Image (cartoon, rainbow, N blue to C red; front, side):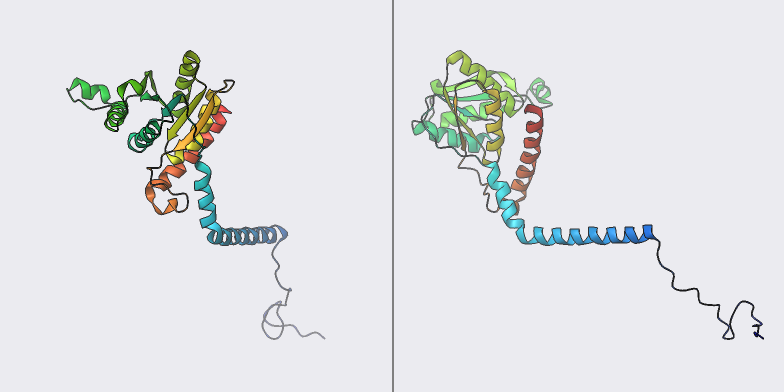
Length: 240
């Protein structure tokens, strides 16, 4: 006869009968495997970026810079935004005999500018600073051209040049700007001058401190590069 334990459904050792190991359900096991694969991919991506980050960053910097071989052109367009480095380059190209006219636009006025004028504060506009800079660098006043309207973007500047080229029959231009801005400038001018037989030469200012080989080491250029890539994406989708 089978002897019963005084502890109920237990054997003589006092322990409940073994029911076998408890296994995780299929869904739980699937989630666990998925998490492991995600962690593995993150680790691999981290190792790749850690090893190749410098070459990747160098290529990012180099991609932004467009530099064409410069020939004598009818008009030099100095883009607004950085009047010192761009003005210096424009003056150099003028003195090299590569153009007879230097053109730039008048930027849209910043917020609060009218209030300054109303209070009698003579705060110079960017185009005034560039004009004075070019004169001081030996560019004669008769060689300097200024747009009549206000511009608020690189595309606006390119469209102003389009109108000028139509009126004057210009067939070749040099566009001077900062190195990080050259790729977007080329995109804007190609779009604005599409259908017109105008040779466009893009020249990055040699007076900029931007270096594609180590730009990420200076916060100033990190901000420039990141901002340019955001603007390139915006231009691509807006003007494609």
